Image (cartoon, rainbow, N blue to C red; front, side):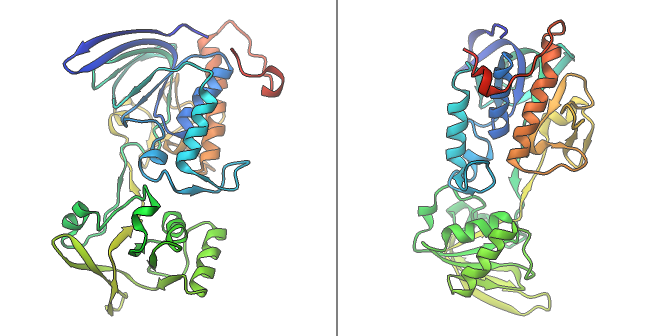
Length: 350
């Protein structure tokens, strides 16, 4: 594993770092963390860089208590717990973490890149992995009058960090995807939940959609279909009702303390968009056989990457991290043949 050299000097109240490593990983979400492991298993050093102040990406920042059901060997695991286990998995590999920084510059070429951050850090790496997830993400907000006042008090929220915050409350959930269905099921035992959707069919996983139907049949969740959000009423940021309407204009009021609109995230690649990577609809195009982008030596994995047949699943991101790590090995060690071994036979490098 290449030596990681770190120097620090103080700038104002912050600290800038200068690091030399094999691979710079931009994004410290679950796929970025697993990339550390896959690189470490090949005795390649890495550094994690993320604009957030802690690792975990959306799993930590947006929904740490959200259950995830498609992680192998875990019938269900909360997002925050998944990050904890990934941190345990990469513990054998000493990886510097540049958190609370945004990569704002990339120069050089395959085998000799230089990255810079908005805090003045400099990272020299032989390859780059972009694991930026949804990039600079933010919620798609419903076009409702007076929305900012309710957002300021927490009466309208776009993420659920703690289930207990909703105990005993009247919660209206709007949306038809996985987040809406998952949180309706997660909150039904501690809150009075109503789900608003413009049609009877949900875009969620079939199993959880079936669980939602069963909960509605039992009277555990109120289904408000086919309706869409129409307005909010209350005073001084305190919500009292959510108005919904049919496509024909029939309006009804739902008693509510909290509105949770789950209409997805808007995605912005941010400074990465200026790197010259070929992209498609704010996603980076890659060769699925290697994970390499249109810029030689720069790879993309996880939700930010796209190619024919791509599935936006964490487990597919994990696979992409392994593929990218093996494709990077000859860049770092061009004269060294890589003899693939299973972890069961070689263990974790010391």
